[in-house]
Amino acid sequence: MSVDKQTVAKIASLARIKMGDEELERMVPELNNILAWVEQLGEVDCSGVEPMTAVIPNTLRLRDDVVDADPLTGGGIRDKVLANAPAPEHGFFGVPKVIE
Amino acid sequence: MTDLTELGVAAIRGGVAKGDFTAREVAEAFNANVAAASALNAFIVTTPEKALEAADAVDAARAARKRLGSMAGVPIGMKDLFATKGVQTTAASHILGGFVPPYESTVSSNLWAAGAGMLGKLNLDQFAMGSSNETSYFGNVISPWRSRESNAELAPGGSSGGSSTAVSARLAPAATGTDTGGSIRQPAAFTGITGVKPTYGRCSRWGVVAFASSLDQAGPMARDIRDCAIMLGAMAGFDPKDSTSLDLPVPDWEAALNADLKGKKVGIPREYRMDGMDAEIEASWEQGKAWLRDAGAEIVDISLPHTKYALPAYYIIAPAEASSNLARYDGVRYGLRDLPEGAGLQDMYAATRAEGFGDEVKRRVLIGTYVLSAGFYDAYYTQAQKVRTLIAQDFANAFEQCDVILAPTTPSAAFALGDKSDDPLSMYLNDVFAVPASLAGLPALSVPAGLTQSGLPLGLQIIGKAFDEQGVMNAGLAIEQRANFSAKPDRWWA
Image 1 (tube, rainbow over the protein chains, first blue to last red):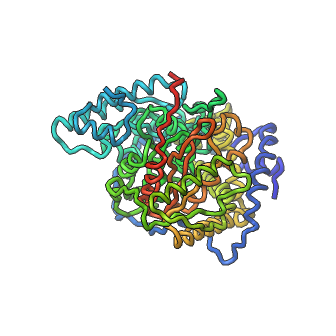
Image 2 (cartoon, one colour):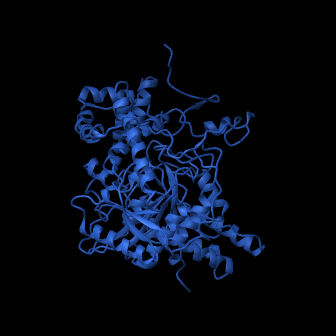
Image 3 (tube, each protein chain N blue to C red):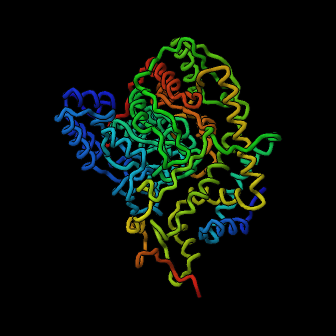
């Protein structure tokens, strides 16, 4: 499978990365080179093989159902959460208007 | 008095504990080397005051006869992928420019608790994506090594290129690294130092900027195996804040180091012998076998039949996970925002990410988005995860016949900066020997094996069974004791 400029533009839009014409054209052969190379995985007979989900066998844990059990990842830290925001306003993240 | 910056972790810790010198003297000596090495561009931010503060705390604890930690008095470099409270953390990207975490990563916090201090935040490939440290927003890291034949600037390897440069240039006795597809082992090999990637899950990923979560693993980079064993012991441990953290006790790897390999079997994977293999790499691999045989091990041939498919599988899985992980950079919650005049929310996202990500990061996010998109998911991503299962099975089968595996770390010695940066594929191929162990989550290390004719370091790689960091480090120690690698770069930068 290979991609053309229109497909790259679509992927870039899905990935929310703005790309001009020149950049899209530069990306087309670069991505095609990589895709042509990974294509060789198709040669491998994977019938009956399960896709890997965990590289080291492990069980998912549940923590105790307690509010703020770990203060590091708990709540009540609004100012810290907003400390690195580019445009915090009134205790919220500021964004451009989204409702017409 | 000895030059303190020639000492490694064990020697510094021992000297401070005995009172041969103070932790402050050590920190001052390394701070001075760091300050004089700006030409190498190994650090994005230097924090001499943090190194001194930690050193003073250790000196005070010693004076008060308190018990000292396993890294007491050792100043280290911290790869700028670890969140450090109050100190800028960027992953060498523009999009995280000026990001100052209000929290500390588990790994760095463990190291500070063990008595280490921070010399600064080390440069790396942007979001750890690269093998030469040429994708950093903050400029290339320059290897301290130079070939005998030319003065061309060489790649320190990547993505932990600031870490490898800092340790080999004596700017730090040790540094943290992270390995997603070889990012600890390849830079260690390029710069004549030792780097250990533990079993996936040994070191918490909490507070480490995410690249490919099913592969990312932190580990130590230092001058020898003992120093790595000490530092890994301080970094590792169960962390409930990381869902893939291993709930296992941390062994005392340092105490159990043993280079006697009698009764051990070392596997030599025949698929790693590639057509057109560099003669010097092949010779160093042969030398490695002889050393391990001399240490008492039996050498056995093994087969890892799916080796050839590891790299292409990696270049589907890692970009797929990266495209998902990097979706968080949206210009809303932290980092850069680019808001063109009159732009709406969607335009702001797209403009911010266009401005904030470098070319290699964009390339991988696009590949990842494509392979995860509707209609292609099974053909690419599911197929790659099945191949990954086969690669892990290859290792499991091989470990029925051997205890550890010996292979080269890299297909060549360090290349010149600029040599591969225009050709992503040839750059990716540099990790051909490193990626399979990453895909299987296995512990692996690179240990210096010698110099090429041109005077550049080569590394040998040991890969072990899951959870057997000890076996890996013991085999590494056997090589280290026989290689007697003592070469270091000339100090041309200061």
